[in-house]
Length: 173
Image (cartoon, rainbow, N blue to C red; front, side):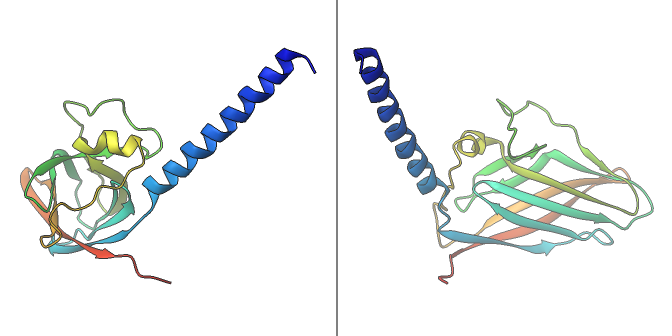
């Protein structure tokens, strides 16, 4: 075997080992060690809203607009408040798999037509880097809960939906 072929084989072996090491490292980052439950603490009449934890730094909002007129979800006025009281602006995502390079300075509101459903994923704009690395942050204060505040423009009035985020260890199978 020529020295070029031997060198190529050695390089491929090193590449394979690095790939395995990187992939196993990612597995550790993706490992889920807690659950998050979002409980509605302030609802909006005729607009049922469910926010669910999707893993990592991602959440999904599902809205049923049962009103006879359109409403708007105002992303720039919606926040996640951490267990330590830090407010983080929500970042509307078109896809968890096609994240923006940077958080935009301003976001368009999402218009929800009358008698329709709307679903969208979001994260905190401060968590964009963590989202790109597939990491899962841990609550800094495990005694306190976090909060999600979603702001809606309904007939020219700002109305706020509120949900409490509780953390619990994963249930063992």
